[in-house]
Amino acid sequence: MTRLSGITPSGHAHAGNYLGAIRRWAREGAPGDLYFVSDLHAMTTPYHPQRLRAHTRELLAVLIASGIEPDQMFVQSDLIREVGALTWLLECTCAYGEAARMTQFKEKAGKDGKVTARLGLLTYPVLMAADILLQGADEVPVGDDQEQHVELARALARRFNGTFGEVFVVPRAVTPQAGARIRDLAHPDRKMDKSAGDVAGVIFLMDAPDLVRRKVKRAVTDSLDRLEYRPDDQPGLANLLEIVAACTGKSPREVADSFDSYGTLKDAAAEALIEELRPIRDTARTLLDDPSELDRVRADGAVRARERGTHRLQSALRLAGVG
Ligand code: AQP
Image 1 (spheres, protein in one colour):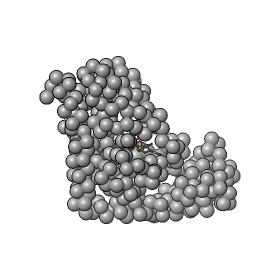
Image 2: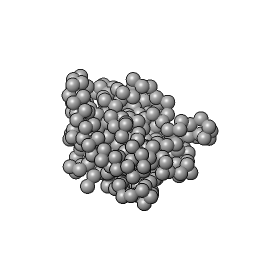
Image 3: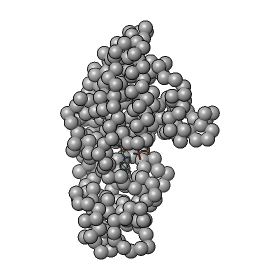
Image 4: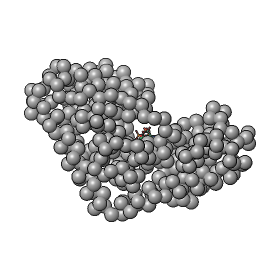
């Protein structure tokens, strides 16, 4: 069984990515799982080319440093010819209305979306379908916001198979076990985000320990001064408790019971994060300082991912009457 998960280099990887997703991939992943850095997905809104390249390498290094097997990962753009070709076949299978009604497109495109949004923002779910169908993924673990896109991939796979001939595995969206959902320390009303404009409340995996301490010290809590786990009433405090819980394996309530002031809890949260992230940061830094190892993993990953997908692409092209 093949399960496919992607992570977009839309910024530096943060503690939320790690505690909520990457760490689980490393600990609970099965041998058939595939992980890819979805750099082409980061191009649907304005971006900076050098930064995109650097974030892509950093994410690859973080995936390796986290313990995911290097032979299970690849970078999406290394397959741009295959993925691009399949995207075109699928775009010619997809109705405009199907793409235009995607909730994420409507949200990200905004009010004037139809006029000013990049065409790639509209068609990106079809690119995502191509990623999934090219690799023959059976399962795609996604949050609520991406479920609709996997539904589209299912619809396109069925339609293509029905119209031209059986070639694609019809994928299933699966909901991953609820992991830690880490909030922005400075704005606990929103999740920790790679592309946040204000990074004061975002703990990046590559942040130095002193910077982590400073960011956690300034985390927004509240004025109730009551150390209880109440996510609805005290989201900032709950976030710190969840962070310590995610790092120590305790429940947030147990963590709340073991502290008697916000100050000591913040110190513990900072130290827990620093220790949890230290091995990832150190190994990722070593990999980034020695580009040859990272280049080798990347090149091998590209070869394997291409081998997995090429026969499907060739069959699809032949059945569609081209190539
Ligand atoms: N704050 C978070 N807490 C827990 N898990 C999180 N993830 C993202 N933010 C948190 C999980 O990380 C995986 C990869 O995410 P993605 O690359 O698809 O990015 P995203 O979900 O859109 O959120 P980001 O990382 O903050 O990026 P941008 O700025 O582009 O929105 C996913 O499994 C996601 O759930």
